[in-house]
Image: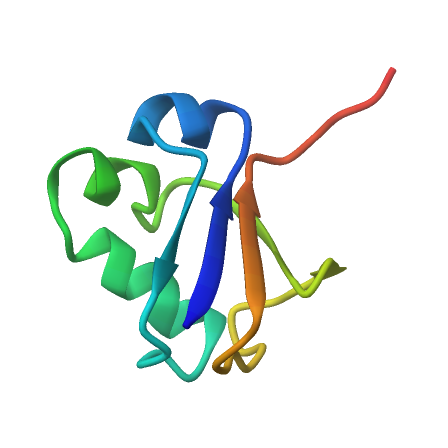
Length: 82
């Protein structure tokens, strides 16, 4: 099981702060594609033209980052400071 967390606008848009998913994806890109494949708000939130950051086990990650059973994946919008 992969623990998936959603933060900020994603949490609002998707109506959930997180969920557990079977460990069928092998990379972060695969996981995002599976979520996008749900359609509706999921397709909108994870559309290829949307900027979504991610962390795997609390470390910033790239689309090619591997994911595996027991991992925690967090998706969040970019953050700016000022």
